[in-house]
Length: 513
Figure 1: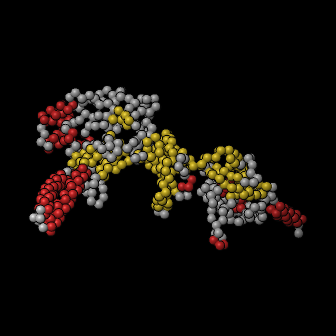
Figure 2 (figure 1 turned 45 degrees about the vertical axis):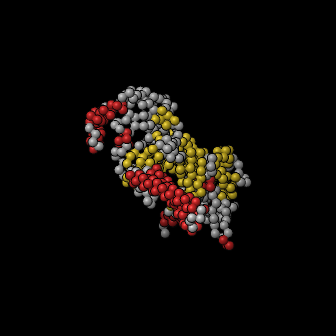
Figure 3 (figure 1 turned 30 degrees about the horizontal axis):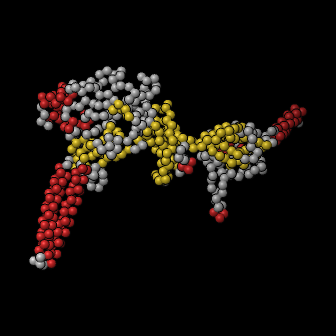
């Protein structure tokens, strides 16, 4: 062979040998751990839920008798007093039954009086031996029957009076009409269920918020806890509330068990541009302040045009209507709103005869009377985004939640043994709330408690520390245990997952789930 050939072969062998040596002796890839410090801080545990706003006391007003609604005396936003007449069911049938009961009572009373007099007369004859005792007993029985018929007639009269009184629908509480569910001419049937005519809120100065809490969190909610919530109409305003009731009644929807939690909140005045943001109600300013002519007397001609069809249907001419209108509006001053308990009332000028309007379909909306015009921030039916503060801890050791979910086993190839549990052993990773108990099947059906762990580096290798997890705020979790001190470096993930052994799950890398 030529000399150059030998030289080329020698160089090739040297290159191959050098490459092999490099591959065998090159430094191994190292995992770059992501670290965080065990620090001290405050943790506030919260439960978020969505609920609805409603009055504290809201009464549904219905009817016990069936019939046609003949009159409505209140409308939406009307302020009513307890016992006030607000509607009437056609009393024709009840009046007839009442008259019949009164006539029956008169007949029964006459029969009783006659039976009593006949018995007294027969008794005197029997004492003089002029009447047989058997005949006296017959008179006595007739008297007792007459007395029983009289008592029955009195009871029938009381029942007829009660049925007649049921035709007059009265307000059960002081409050504001927030819903009207019927109109004049509508037929209501109370045979199988009670039809509702109105919804009355007793007091709008305080409202109630109801939310549904899942069974996994309900044990953390206690009466007296503080809560905050916002409504969509005022997203920048936070309302403070207090948990007043945790209902024991379970509500199951699609196999999910929830419990209702109620909170009471003062209804704050809604701030306006004209009051420096201090909030206002109908009582804070006069109705005509800054709004001259707001309650000016209505135009009779316009009122007639608006009521023309209804008046003509009742046989009322234009001249008669204008005469009545002027009589009722003459000398009346403009209504001004008042306030009580966050409510504002305005006396509207009547249009036409109130008794006539109350018996016309749609006429209730044109009746006068006190109206709620208060500008309160919370309204019935609003959606509340609620945060309940269930626990607070100050100046405690805490770790990021990712530290409790991290498992370094997926990132180590050759280390078969490590202090603590085997790195290859599947661990029960943290669930939605770190520190919560989990159950594992075991022999004999025993239930085991999960041990929470965090990982630290010791001589460059991961080492597990058993800790006890406390409350969490969703970002940090309180921990206690031996060997824990402020400033301790703990593992929360890796910087580069390409060198990991196999595919790592988001939980293994410390990412939030």
